[in-house]
Length: 358
Image (cartoon, rainbow, N blue to C red; front, side):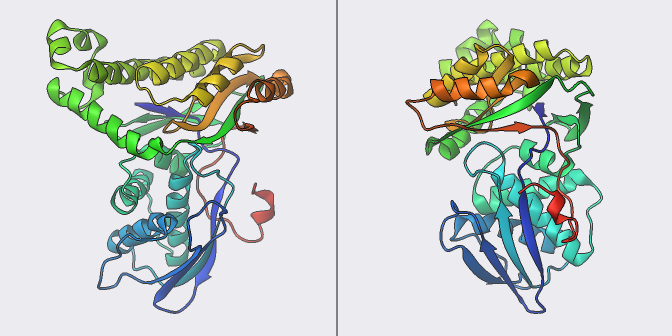
């Protein structure tokens, strides 16, 4: 069970059209994309596409391959990839590219996937098989299903998702704080955490952590089976599921103070039990949590750098930004943006483009 604050006011766009050939030509406009930033490859008619260099193109190739096999034949096209989503920041830049690619393919083939869960799961599969990242489903779900003014409650066991309205009271906003730190541990340690969690479930003879209670995790028999590290990983997941339910209920009731406290507890658990935070994120969270106008702050994303997200009173935003900046003088200077809940992926005509954020 996961909880996400829908799409952010940053975008990834594929701008392009059919080219009446048997090739796909891509250009990435991202300064952080690995080289080369231009790549061409044949449409997968007979021979399957395979991953390779550059890495950024694998996210596109994976979606093209799955779409071509399951939805409709993919025609040749030229496309430029534009993105204001900072890479490696924990803000779902890879999922944004996958979902943007899938939405682009829907447009040029006139074949729209009506079941949004199928679209999200296809993009997740593309990341698993072509990028080699065993990611969860949250990022793809929110990129596909984002709804303005709502958070998204995702049941990872049943693949169901529910929108939780954030209400019409605009006293509070979410402040994204990018630490501008990226430790290379993030991708490798994510796979390690997945393996550790699977080991916990295997030893407890459970399929999902939804079937594991805190009582069963603390049982003497379980304590003998699990290593200290495995217990901590399991403790984080079980308590985070509970916080997710409580957080959804708090938002339904407009109880932002309780939601903020749950965010603080979540960060503590990610730091101490799941061990995916880092000094820079801890500094940001600790500083923000101590400031007037901040209800809660936690890291977000895969960890080991990237972003924190704070729930703050609108009247205090500028003061909070100034004080966090002043606190982080020994670290890279953080960057900030205020977030609301925006719509997920959609087709945009050139005539409508100026109204979008980029």
